[in-house]
Image (cartoon, rainbow, N blue to C red; front, side, top):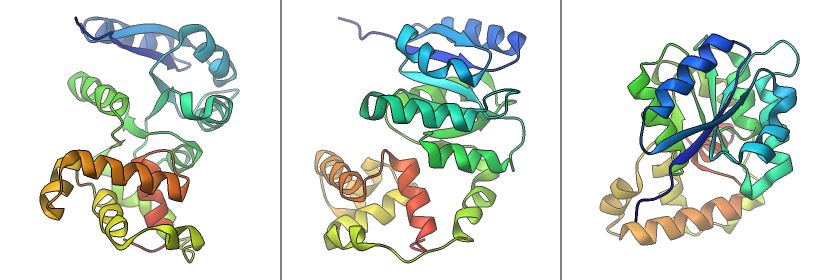
Length: 217
């Protein structure tokens, strides 16, 4: 029995852009475009109506921006919130860092190739983080500039969990961590779940941000 397609919605103020991406997404057998809106004020309602697994979110819109919309979705739906993939025109857009801090699972530039965008949707839906390579350094340097000492939550981690946390924050996949730590992937997944829970983080993107903010990388 085939798995249900990943449901994708979009919030962007450019109608032609939304229409073009809708056609690209619907051309894939494992993806389904389920709805859109032209402003962030419709974010929570769109999630309730369309039940997307992933939302493509424009970071800059005239009334309610993508940062505010992302925060509203994550606060309203918490653990059941769809993954948010932020789209931006500028690779040095400071608002992108705010969106990730608000709960987004990553971001891409709007001029990314369709194949890369489709791959990013699939990656985010499966729980991975996606960050446009050209902006990775500048994005996280912003967090490094506001380094603060780790709180007591870091003390809850075991030595093994700290090792795995740092490897994950450096971008290693579960398979790569498993090989480096001589563990099974299932064990790494269990450790990652415990790490995120102890640090009260939603996903790996927030884990990377946490490590930069606290001077661990």
